[in-house]
Image (spheres, rainbow, N blue to C red):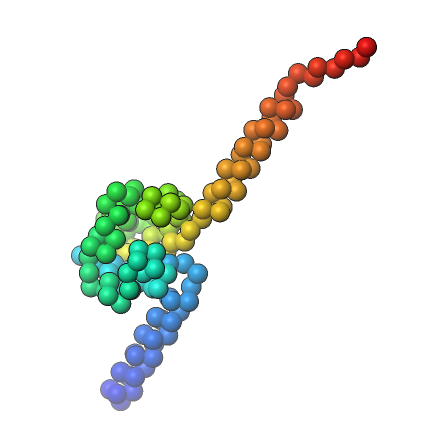
Length: 146
């Protein structure tokens, strides 16, 4: 009986790891000591580390660029208040915009993030286009009826 339960637990863990690795977002989880308990390949690729080698290490040891990032404060806030956070941030080291969702759990936080640079660029282009339209539409007409 115990062997069956152990096998089921291993299958469940493998299925969970497969699911977290297949999602479109980068994902990592840290415990209340700020040690990484899980990271999928997208998260590892983003900071240039093998996710398996990051397990058990402190988040700031694996991703020291977070020290200069406003997102670290949001992670800390989510950890302290146990309230979810959503943020958009320009990630200077990669020169990209990111959207992150931070979810507290029983022993830490889970973070899902993905790049939104194209979305931000499209929003900026739309704002510029609207501004140009307003400037043209509000310009006094210089009609010459002669």
